[in-house]
Image (cartoon, rainbow, N blue to C red; front, side):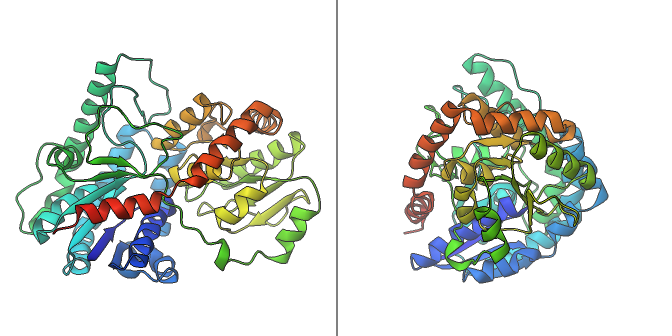
Length: 421
């Protein structure tokens, strides 16, 4: 089977798609990835065919308007406005890249932010489309996965469902005009008024949710074509050699904590790093600090801090005492898989929801929104993560469960079941 996987966004959005494409290839399928051009090297490293979209996400996320968006906590109105501008500017190029990259596809997998494009372009190519999200991107009565900094009040089940549907519909109606150029390029009618993912599930198309039921059980009311697979990890420790300086740092003192904010844009890098350094010192800890795309780095660091560009989470996290991170779905999964407590400083959208969920399950202290982060609050949270034995035991227990799962194998099996006969 020839499978084209579509991905768009930051490293946290594209890396699971690379993992899926590589897993499909290992199962004998001809697989290619269509994604922003800065991910070409990552795809090539795993033997995945690659078709570049005409956009570089590192450049996009370092733009001043993006940094301002993240610094503001991801205000929904500002987020919609930013998304509209990006899709209007890049949508035609993305649609063309998908059409070229998927012209021989037997099946398309549209991950996360590529969902609307996948739903539209699969019709143009007349192939089945499997959808994938890193979060529960559909309504449920038994919980409300709210991607907002302010926690919603406890609501009855019907209100959870109605509120999600209302937000989903409102977001789609705001975004819908930006997809008109892609429809025109593809010779399709204008986008429908109903949200594409809701329509796809209603028509029986498969939706894969790439997280673990050990953290968030599947809603009882979801149809059978919605499957929670487990996380899609891209393991790299077998191909990565740690620098000798890192190995010496790990051996020369108490077990450190990890601090890193992944692909997040930092509005004030120096202030963020100052808060981290002060918090680590006040907590009496050592830390491995990952620069990430936001550039959380400088030269004048104390001996208790090791500066790192990047390292595979599957190698590094098991060697840490706790994980301080932004709450992205992939990093959340990696921290749980390692069996370590988290300290979450969410920036935007679903990061707030994952942070609240970890706190509710006793796997992390209360969330610390990054835009209001202080050294004292972060130090207190780090001390809790290091000293709360019950939290550490819960993290170790869920880690054993997550390590026993095989989200990629589950996803490949579901895709094969969705293939044309």
